[in-house]
Amino acid sequence: MSGFFTEGFLAAVLAGLVTGIGGFLTFFKSSYSKDDINLMLNLAAGVMLAASFFSLMEPALEGLRCLLPSHTETAIWFSAALFGGMFSIAALNAFLPHDHEISGHHGTRIKLSAAWLFVIAISIHKMPEGLAIGVAYGGERLNNPESLTIGIALQNIPEGLTVAIALISAGYSRLKATVAATLSGMMQPIGALAGLLIADIGSLMVPLGMAFAGGAMMFVIINEILPETYDAKQDKRSALALFAGFILMCGLSIAMQ
Image 1 (cartoon, helix red, strand yellow):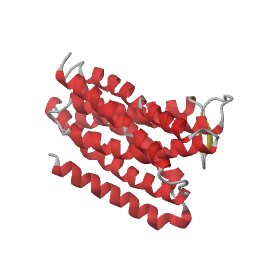
Image 2 (spheres, rainbow, N blue to C red):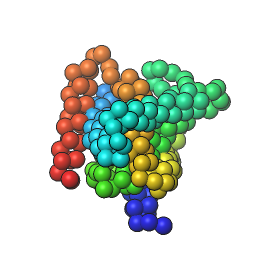
Image 3 (cartoon, rainbow, N blue to C red):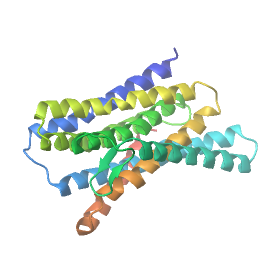
């Protein structure tokens, strides 16, 4: 097994475990307001938006330019991979049962508590993030996968907090809620395995896989996270948090090159 395979899988495990830090925050404060959580999630969305562009889509485009004979073929393959990532997560989102606070129920109908349906919603987010880590480590020569992993780990903290709060409100203890939040992050190593296997197929699959993962992450950010966090009463704070997260990740990506 090649070195990048082991490194990528361990990076995804560590990033997933950071989700538990968000759950652990419930031990330090009895309650968090919806505005506070939305602010953290918008900050995280800005981080992920920059990560999907600078750590996935940009190096994917450069890689395809080096491997394909014309700009037309590059544009077609890049666009197809990007759309494929968006469509795959959209299909997963339409099939798996889960709840969002604002947009309500998605997927098939199943008898689960609202709290656990929310946990499933967060877990769906983790798969494309893990996939992104996997293909990023497979394409180390194209980019710096460490900055992407750090960005995803930072984004996991507020999501872990929201999972824990949802379960605590459903009657679970803080300890059980924290454990469940941590376990939800373990969807990332599963996604990373898929990304690593894709990257191991051949040189062309590395940039295509990165573009695919970038499209998947963009769908999660634009369709899943932002509609749930943008409150009309807090739109300026939400926008500032999004910009701050984007700038933070831009600086991190540049510093780690």
